[in-house]
Image (tube, rainbow, N blue to C red; front, top):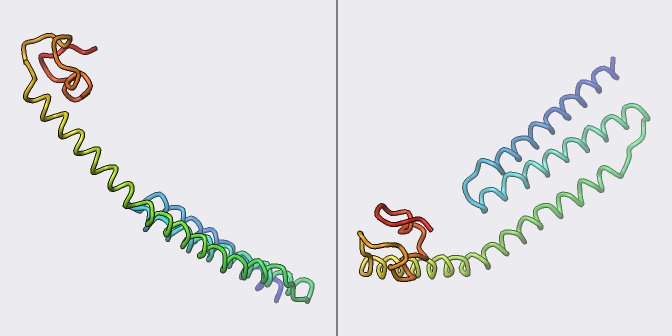
Amino acid sequence: MIETLVSIVVALLLVISGLLTLIGCAGLLRLPTFFSRVHAPTLGNTLGVFTILLATILYVFASDGRLIVHPILITVFLVITSPVTSILLVRAAIVRKPHEAEAQKQAKVNVHATDTAASHDHQPSGDAADQPDTIRANPAINDAPGTKAQ
């Protein structure tokens, strides 16, 4: 009777572990930003592995009558390393984000300057070879009606 009860509890813990890990993976795929994406797998990973290790401890204790230390050590190391890794990834993203924002801002300024130059120099009825390089370099203008594709 006890073995059946332990087997049911172990099976439930394993199913819960799978669900937690699946929810963490779904959060990784579905959440919109990096900062929200990094949170879901960390929790799913930590809680999922914790329930697997709890099931292992319970199963070995019930079948052999002894307490094993390996899963407890794995749980401790996982609880320490997984959040620390997540924190380091977030800090790296925070440091990198201003540089990316500056690069995107500069790219928008370059595109705006190209578009402005193209609107002043654009000749709707002319051939694409007769147009300045700034117009031919901009793919949005190359696809405009009245211009030839290169």
